[in-house]
Image 1: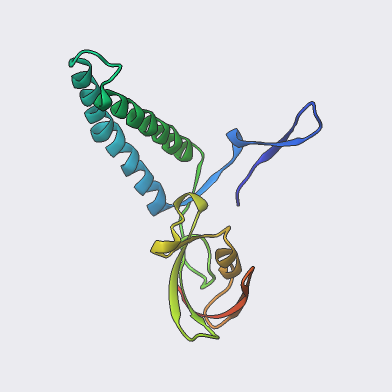
Image 2: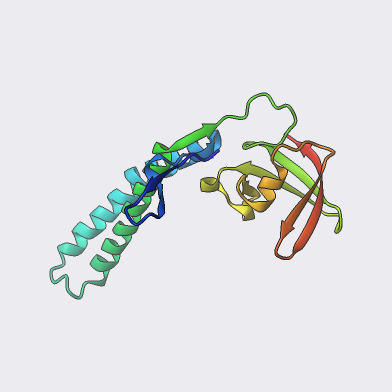
Length: 173
């Protein structure tokens, strides 16, 4: 799903042209990133600008910790703004249409570990919104890739450095 083009350098090596790379996002992920960008631009960054202005008024900046800390944070926030704008500008939003029962980006999949017997629930998302601790796995991850295209009742094997794990897909929504 991720599109990219290769540019040929004069050294003969391949180089990925990131300006054309698409970032796969669910509709929810796209909206979450828009909200984060809005909050940073309208609340967090203006507060930092005020903090820098107030620290400058204290005089000598060479030993003004608050000024230097605020400038460091401003650099981090400006970097995050640039990153979020880039993601949104390159986004390929995947709206989950009428499900045919197969796992795809935007699906929620309940699986059962066939060896241990426990159940887990995962939402399959694009890499930019992946958060395994929150149950959001990328379609490009080992587990996400193994689930893609499968439906309830099917068995999947996931090969990892720790071994092969077998799962039954209980549901796909």
